[in-house]
Length: 188
Ligand SMILES: [Zn+2]
Image (cartoon, rainbow, N blue to C red; front, side, top):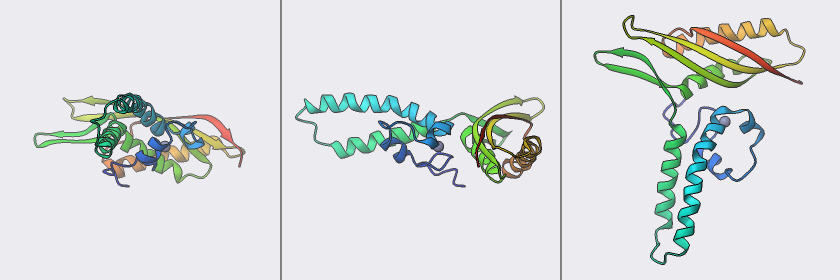
């Protein structure tokens, strides 16, 4: 997983893709994807500013650098879309290790994707840091849809165990509290 890929969200959609679909109704992926929804909402403000700029450019004969302007707007859009809450994983006298909430929820989504019969939806992560103890406690609130006809308690427990392994393996801290809400069923 390329956490540093600035052109893609954690769900794999590219910023350019989302930008291109700004005026379109949400796709079925976007309806379920918090990352895409947040990116779209942030970029909407930039979109409005772009339209205003374009309007004024039409009346400005000296406006001759449309490509340059488009590039700087796209850079701004990408920066906006990837800006998300950061969690401090470790603070030492040599510096800190941080991870974005988006990267952490990608890790959780990947874990969920490995469980048959589960589709992950919204993922919210709260973090309580105790500077004195040097400890971090996560509370992961994940909403999922499950396939109809499966054993929901056993499947969700399997998901919890998967997350409990994936977080320490990926980022070196305990998954903490994992709250999973089954909010919908889907037909298989
Ligand atoms: Zn998405």
